[in-house]
Each structure stands twice: as C-alpha cells, then as structure tokens.
Length: 440
Image (cartoon, rainbow, N blue to C red; front, side):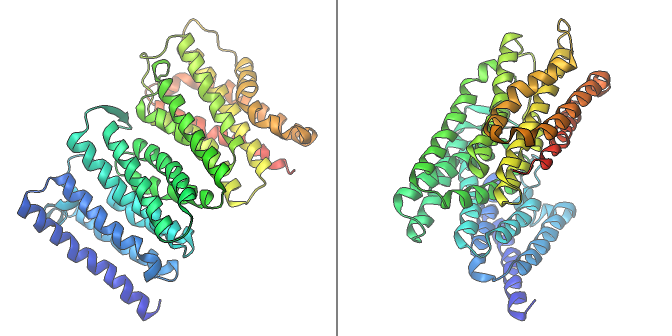
C-alpha cells in the first residue's frame, strides 16, 4: 500500500480510538443508557465507513482497516480491564452479541462489491447504522408488541421505525445526489426498506451487521437497473409475500422471526434473481400451511428461524449464481426447483414420522415433493424437456435415497433438531447439483 493509503487507514483507526473514549465519557456524564451508548458507536462508525468511496480508491486498504478494527474490537471484548473501561460503551448490554466483530468485515465486503460506486456502498452502510440504531432505540424505549426473533425478541414499533429510516436513507441520497429521479427513488426506497426491515427482524446476536448491508447491496444493485413498472411490481410482490406470511401465522408452526424469514427468502429469490425463483419456495410454504392446519399442529410445535435457514441453504446459492451471471438463469431455476422438491420430500417424511397415526412412505414423499415444489419452477423450462430428463432422474433418485436414509436414522437426531434441519438443507443442495448437467 502507498503512504497515502496507510495514512488514511491511520485516520480511520485513530478516529475509533478517540471516538470510543469520548462516547464513554459523554455516556457517563449524562447518564446515557447502555443501548443508547452502543448504538451511538455504531452510528459513529457508520458515518466514517459510509465515506470510504471518497477516502479509498481500492479495496485493499479497506480490508486492512477492517482487520485492524476487528482485532481492536476483539481485544475490547476479551481483555477484562478494557471491557470494563472503554469497551463498556459496546458491551454495556447484557445480551450476547457479535455485532462489533462482524461490522468491519461486512463494510469491507460491501466496498469490494460496490467497485467504487458511492451509492452502492453508502446506502447499505447508512441503513445498517442509522436505520438500525433508530429502530433499536425506539423499540427498546417505547416498543410494546413483541415477536420472536431467533433466541430473542423484537418489537413491532422498532421494525416500523427501522422501515421509515431505511426508506429515508435510500431515497434522500438517490435524489439529492442525482442518481435517479424522485419517482424511481421512491419505489426503490419502498422495496429496499421493506426487505431490509425483514432482514433486521430475523437477525439477532448482532448478525444484522452482516445480513443487512450485504442484502441491501444486492437488492439495490438489482433495483437501480430497473424501470418503473418492474420496480412497482417488485414492491407489491414483497408486500404481498409479507402479508401472506403474517396472515398465515395462526395456521403455522413458525414463530414471528421465522415467518419474516420466509417472506424475506421469497423476496430475495424474486428481486435478486428472477420472479420465477420464488415459486418453488412458496409452494413449500403453502404445503407447510396445508399440513399444519390439516393435522392441527399450530401451537404444538414452535419452529424458529433455523427452519427457514435450512431451506435457504438450498435456494440462495442458485440465486447468487444467477445474479452474478456465472450460470444461465434456466440452469439456476432448475437447481432451486430440484432443491425445494427434495426439501418438501424431507419435510413430509419428518412430519409423518412425528405423527404416530400417519404411515411414512419415502416414495410417496418424494413424489409429493417433486409434484408440488419442483414443478412450479420446472414448468417454465418445458421447451427443453429432453435435456432435463437426465438431471431430473438423477435428482429424484438422490431425493428418494436420502428420504429412505432419513426414515431409517431419524430417531438418532432426537434432541438435535437444529442439526437435523441443517443436514436436510445441505442434502437438498447436494441433491440439486444434477441441474448443472442442464445447459440450455
């Protein structure tokens, strides 16, 4: 790195070293609550990081600064005297959080992806810091109505304030900076704020510091290249998915955070890749509602976000590959259809194993999974039916064999539900790999 780059890195680290003690003194002087002090640090760091496109010309010095900041914040966490002193500004809250460790790598990742585009960098960082701080403080101070989020709780008021702040963090830079006209900026802001609000609602223990900026970058990059009809369509699709999962909550075993995660997963598939990508996951969700209502399972089980994350393992790699253009969109659509067909087969098998009165039939579960979840994606590829025969046959065979294995070994996972779900997610992704043989 050049001397100018080292100097810029030094100013960033120096600002943090000066800012943390200063904020701690102000917090002690005015009796500021620990959560307010913590969010103040995030806002301070966010304002500095949002200016990186005007400070650094390439990603390397940003990664160096991120590494140094992460080491520094890690020392504040593990050294007792520092944690009680300067680090108390960050660690004054009692809940476990990894946010300060994830913050700097997330910023560096967004800067790397943005490739010197100030809007693609500054807007996600602004949403992460300003909107997250506003929502967190409002929810802590005035929030009453709560919903489950991971191992913690979030408030409806906090999510609403986050939505409004994220909308302003998006619209104002786009309009004032002249990147888009007001009409386009409003629709981009509505869609991005809605998706970022869902991401904030599902992330706990500080993982929102990683999820929010990366999601915001990918969504913003996609939306900036769209015209008005498509922008409006994406917003209404996101709003309808959110409304669907919220209205379906009385018949679902998913808690509030998992329902938000389901809506976010569907929106990410539609916005980041292609609207057809949302159809297989939606089919899985609707099948879940049908089964839980039919067998009256709502209230019997309490499924959290890890259920949705297990499904995301099979979905998001194909969405990412399609978004980056590394694979043809039809190939990725076949991949996500294969993955969701397998997931529904696994879900059907586990449900029947849990309900004693139901007979478990792996072949029936496989056919149901492919008939309900895979077909909504594959139907769009019907002109290439012959080329799909071999990939479909391989994937169906793998799904059937894994379903047999799941039936035989299910009892060994008793007490390890989270591990079982993630294993199903990985197996569904592996079972979808035959889609790579489909080259339209």
